[in-house]
Every structure is written in C-alpha cells, then in structure tokens.
Image 1 (cartoon, one colour):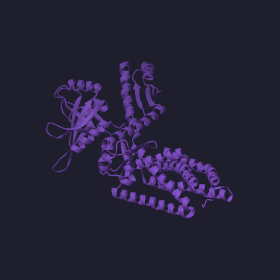
Image 2 (tube, helix red, strand yellow):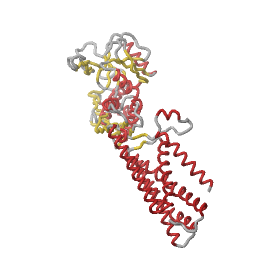
Image 3 (cartoon, one colour):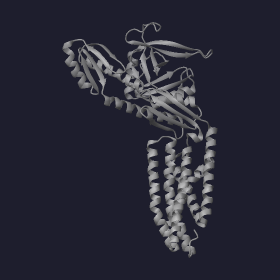
Length: 519
C-alpha cells in the first residue's frame, strides 16, 4: 500500500506542478525554477480571438504552368536532335505540335518517349499531342498541397503567430487559424501572396505602348501618386520567358536603398549566383524587370556585371511592406496561387467572454457533482470528490506538459470527463452496496465492488477512447481539441477511480476497522 501511495502522491504533485505555470504572471514565471515544468496551455482561436481562413489552391493554374514547362522541354528536346516542327503550343490540358517532315515522325516519337516519361504521346496524322499521365497529375496535385502547407507554415512562423493551425482539408483547401492576431488584412497579404519572383529582360527597341513583337509580352508596374493617391500603370515589353526565377533564392531581408527608401535585398545560392552573373555580364547597359506575381516592382539597368549573387528590389512600398515581402520570399514561392474562400474573425472581447463562460460552466458543473456525491454517498462521496480534484489536476497538468491548445469544445470535453469520472465512482459504490446486501464483510465488499465494476468501467472508457482517437485523427481545429481533452480526461478518470479511490477506501478501512460500511 505504501508503494501505491508514493505513486499516487508523485503523480498528483507532478500534475499540480505542471498546472501552476498557467496561473502565474509572466514576471512570476521568470522566478520559476528551470527544473520545474514551464509550458502552459495555449488558448485556441475561439478563446483568445484571431482569424480563421479557408484557402483554396488553384490547381488548374499549376497544371497549366506545368504544361507550359512541358512545351519548353519539348522544344529543347526536338532542337537538340535537329527535328523540325511547327505550331508548338501548350494549353491547360495538353501540348501539341505538327511534325514538319513526315520522315522524322518516328524519330520524334522515339526521342520524346525516351526523355518525357511522365507523358502520354498520341499521334493523329502529322500532329503530336502530349498529355501528362493520370498518376503524374495526381502526384503533382498532392505535392503542391503538401508544399503549400509547409510554405504557409514557414510564413506564419516568421509572422510571429503562437500556436497556429495549418492543415489540409479535402482535395484543394487549406485551413489556417491564427490565434491572437489583430491585423487580419496584413496576415492575408502575407499568407495569400504567391511570391513568384522572376527577372525579365526588357525589349531594347519596341514601344511599350504598342503591341508586343513575337517572343515578347507586356507586363505593368503600378505607381501610386503620393499626393493624389491615383495609381498609374507603366507598361514594359519583356521577353516571353523569364531569364531567371526565384527558385535559387537563399535569403531576403528588408533594408534601405541609397536614397533612404525601403528595399528588399535578396541573395542567390551558388547556381543562382552563376546564372545572375552570366545574365548581368551579357546584358550590361540593358534594362531588366524584377517581377513579383506578374507585376513589375522595379526595372533597373545592368550597369556592370553582378558577381556576388545579391540584388535589390525597390518599389512603391513602406517599411512594413518591405518586411512582409522579405518574409514571403524567405519562406519561398507557393507552387500555385491561393485564394481566400472563407474568413471568420473572433474578437478578443468575444474570446474573453467565451473563456469566462467556459470556466463558469466547469465550476458550476464541478460544484454540483461534489454536492451530489456527498448527499448520496456520505463520507465515501468525499473520497470520490478528492479523486475528482486530482482528476482535474491531471487533465490540466498533462495538457500543459503537451503544450496543448484549449478550445471551447475542449472545455466541453473537460466538463464531460468530470461527469464520466464520477460515473466510474458511482458504478463502484453501487457494486459495493450490492456486496454489502449479499452479506459480505467491509473488506470483501470493497474488493468485490471494485473487481466487478472494473470490466464495466474499462469497456465504457476504452470504447470512448477509440471514438476520441478517431475524432482526433479525422477531425480538425476545435474538434481535435475536444477529442484531446476527452481522451486525457478518460485516462485520468480511470486512474483516479480505479487506483486513488480504492486506495483511499482501503486506507480508511485499515485505519478505522469498521464492522459495516455506511455507504
């Protein structure tokens, strides 16, 4: 019995120690010894306020750009082999071209089949049609979603949001929950920006206000007049394809240019440094456009070869916008554009009201349970209430140790587990009453009551645990919070009902040696 008491006291004290950091101020927490628990329970979005965003990934745009890349690859393969073609074009569903010489058709098919393994090549006369295989398209979609989740997580982490929720929902949606955030518009700007960075060479001769010649296209720079607030669009005629993309970026930081204006300094990796050095050295004196998400940010001129792999992006933005731009560039470009399809905002005052209401519900429910147990089971009800107090400490202690997020449904889970913890004690006490009516001694009644109630308690709690595990696995957000608190509460209630309540009753029996149990 001594060993069981040591175990119970150690577990209870550990739970209390893990719970205390939740109820001390930040100043007091700094005095808390480092060897004691430090983590606290984080309040969820519905309890501290914040933003809930549902983002939809534009997979069609991803597939369209992938076919554009396939078009470039087909052009390269055919030119390297000296094979002639015409009318090579890419759509959102396929790449097609016409073989210029009939005698080269077999060579074209053989070359493309050897080098483009993820495509299906169909031939209709002298026309070739290339489609991605269904398996590759599925891989493309799943990789894009997984990559988008990771990039968004990186952006949110740099944004400084504590305990965010970022997870995939369905085939093309991503849920982002940002507890405690107050600038929703800025968060949407950072999270939703695709951040596709490209460098284009500007045409030397063509008029930007005229139709672009073959091999060129028109893009715009938006310039805001600070005096009037009007936005002017400055056209640029640039090459159809970028000379360099942002895939080789290794860093970005917000700085100031030589005129004291906010700017973003970017750094390329080794391969990117080589490409940028070659691009700048071959085009000294030529204007180039720095383009982000199909909009020109600046269009400087290569004054000399740039060999250090560093470039500066200037534009019409303030310090905060420069920092946000550096953040999204550091985290990387999204593989496909995303759009906000659902937005919910919870104000801090509403969250505080939810916290007060939730804690009030827990306290009222807890108080009623304590009273009912004493009324129905006398002093034995006090033993059950003691176990119940330890049970609540275990729930908060485990959640603090895990750094779990407490949501409003999670509070409901705590209330539910309080009832389930008492339910186990009720089963035990009623079994003990049956044993007493059967004429057994106090010790025999206690042993028989616990023994016969054990299987029922285990069956009920294990099935509920399985349900909680399924909810946690397939649910999201607040539903997972409910499942977590429910699971922790169930395991804590089994420990307190089966171990602690029995230990209290056996210790009382050994101390008082009653001839009958007044239960």
